[in-house]
Amino acid sequence: MEEQSAASQTMEPQSGETTTEERPLTVDEEIAEIEKLLSEEPDDFQARCRLGELYFNKGRMDEALAEVKKSIEMAEGIRVEMDRSLAMYYSNLGTIYGTKGMLEEATAQFKRALELNPYDVLALFNVGRLYNDKNAFLEAKEYFERLIEISPEDPIAWYNLAGVYEKLDDPNISDFNTLDMAMQAYMKVLQFDPSNLESSFKLMEIALNLKKSDLAVKIMEDAVENNPDEPLAYYNLINTYEKCKMFEQAEEARNRLKDRFSKRSREMVKK
Image 1: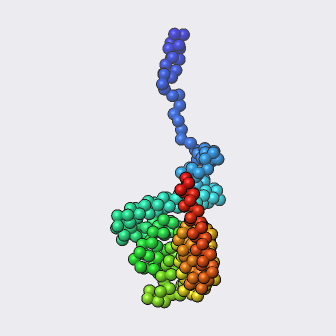
Image 2 (image 1 turned 120 degrees about the vertical axis):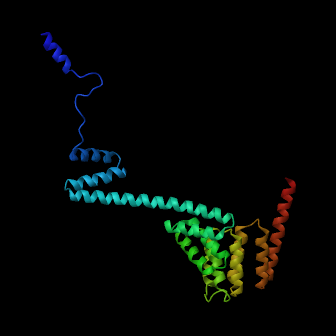
Image 3 (image 1 turned 90 degrees about the vertical axis):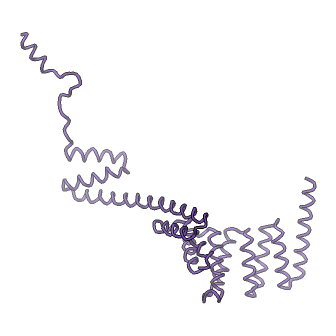
C-alpha cells in the first residue's frame, strides 16, 4: 500500500507545470476565431487578409474571393488616406520654402503634393499663385481652374482666376479672348462675397471699358449697399455716375456720402 501511494504521488503534476501541451489551432478553428473577431472588429485589416488566405487553403474559393476583394478595398482606402496625409506635409514644406523665398523648391513640393493628391486645395492655390507671380498666366489658369472644380464656392479662388483671365485677354500676353470669362469670374466672387470691393472695382472698370454703363452703375450701387460704411465705395459710385453722365445721381450720392459720414463723426464725438 505504501508503494502504491508513493507511485501515485510521483504521477501528480508539480506546481507550475501543465498537464498537456497547447496544440496549434486547426485551419477550421482559426477560421472560426477570425470570423468571430471580424464580426466584432470588421476593420481589422490583418485579420481579413489572413481569413482570405485560410479560405483559399480550404478550397472555399467564393469566400476567399470576397475576402480578398474586401482586403484590397481596405488597402486602397488606407493608401488614399496615407497619400492625402503625405500630400499635406509636402504642401506644408512648399509653404515653408515659399516663405523663405525659395520659389522653385516651393513649386516642386506643391507639385509633389498634387501627384499624391490631385485635390490638395493648398497646393493648387499656391502653384497657381506662383505661376501668376511669374507672369506664366496659362499655367496659372490651369491650376486655378482645377481649384474652382474642387472649391466652386470659394470667392478667393474665383478672384484669382478672374485676374488670370483678365491678364490673358491682353493681346501683348496671349491671343485669348477671356474678358467675358473674367467678368463672369468677378461676378462669382460677388455672388459668394457681396462686400468684396476689389471685385466690384475690377468689374466696374471692365464694364466701363466695354461701354456697358448700366452694368457698371449697378455694380457700384450694389457695392455701396453692401459696404455702407466704406467711403471708397461712395467715391467710386460718384465717379461711375459722372463717367456715365448721370450728374444728378452723382450729386445725390455725394450728398449721401457727406450726410452719412458727418453723422458718424458726430456720433463718435458724443462717445
